[in-house]
Length: 81
Image (cartoon, rainbow, N blue to C red; front, side, top):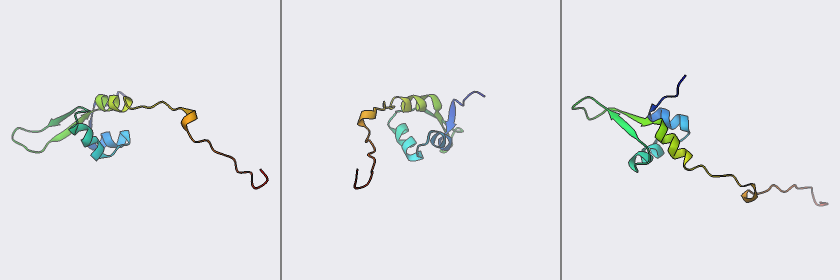
């Protein structure tokens, strides 16, 4: 099955593991694309999120993992070492 190109806000947040408020922050800041579908004269409508733009934004923030920067676990062998 082909991935959905447009997602409702709840679905976008749930499937990407982020909160709705963070998703709306991305929208407000112009970091991701959306479309508002509504009938002429209506104030309310359906907000759809571009899955492609959301995924691209998330991918742009992927950080490499450097093992040397991670804390290493020290074995505790008791008082005798």
